[in-house]
Length: 277
Image 1 (cartoon, rainbow, N blue to C red):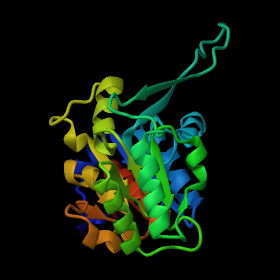
Image 2: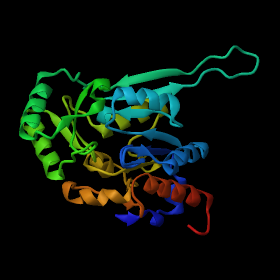
Image 3: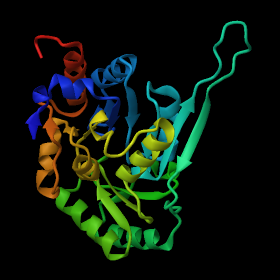
């Protein structure tokens, strides 16, 4: 991983899309940092498309798509995408409010699948301190098992074992910084990113690979790190290095949301040609 400061001005100037994880990439300790949220506004005001890509549930994505300065949001590790289409603001015409749109991955399977029930039963039996995530009620497609969002925090070794239980039962699973997300269906963050960008913005795989930067922090971001040559981790990604085969190309010096702000400020400065960068 190279320091984000080593990104070239040409690489920064070629960007059109800024994609980012949420937990421990925009947040710290579960709170969205002011520095990170302000950076979302600055990136969007600079003309870049800003799209969070998260393991968080459909219910959260509804709020994010409507209220954050973003051009869409991908949730539940790729099961769905939500975005807002603007209303009519032409002077003299009746105001038309924005409309929320949704796309669901064709391979997504609802989370009442019996395999997920068995994974949940086995995982909770093996780890009595494990719990189902408090946001499970607003999920449509996955099961989120909380090993580190609330106390008591379980070690990463436990998260790895929970992932293995899911795989043994025939489910898919990824470890984030707080949850083990388990689902049925052949998709992940990457497959929905490619689907959403191409259908919504006409993005072309291959030719458009260097138009995109993804910022993340944990193993469930690995498909994105592996796919896009300008991917970037916030500094806390280093704690998961032994759990991943592919690390991001760049890394910030700061962690969590402050690291994302560092990435954003570096990109914007290089696009402006600031000499300090």
